[in-house]
Image (cartoon, rainbow, N blue to C red; front, side):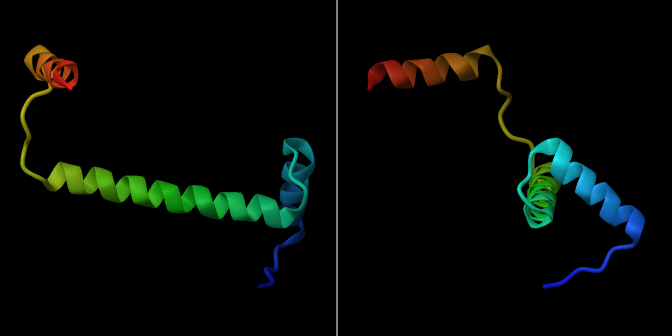
Length: 73
């Protein structure tokens, strides 16, 4: 895959590669793509959670119950 960039963006990418310790511009772009993919997955999970029915409250009783379960094992 080849990507064409205007000179100003190419200069920016080159600065990021040099200043942030990437070996190549491809490494930098791969990291950007991975971060974008992760952001989209997080957004999807947050929206799914917001659209779901409310769950039980995570109060002191909830955590005490978890501790009891762990202690019983």
